[in-house]
Image (cartoon, rainbow, N blue to C red; front, side, top):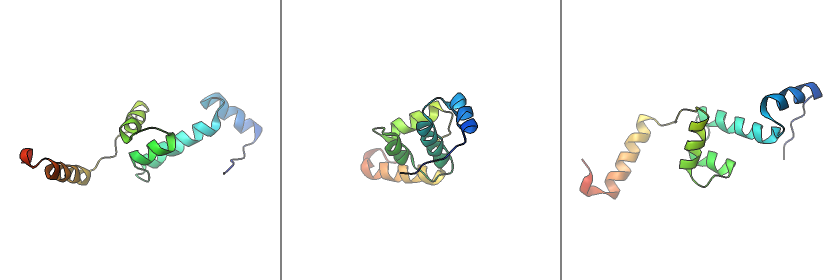
Amino acid sequence: MQTLKLSPPAEETLIRAFGPDLDHAAIEALVIEGYRLARLSAGEVAKVLGLATSIEAQQWLAQRDVPLNFSLDDLKEDRAALAALFPEIAP
């Protein structure tokens, strides 16, 4: 377990800005930044936040105006996976 040490004035300022549960606010901020930097996947975000699925994580991120990390390569991989699963509808 890591502990972040704050001076009393800094702690008061952050509590005013983010509420009394600074531990949770810090985790959310790290998760958002990790996802924005593509260091965390939506599945990892879900795991850290205790969400059931990556879809729930994507919804949680969208509610916080975090854009979806989805590249052209991701799309190509998804299309190939779907084509393998459903060859009758593949182009």
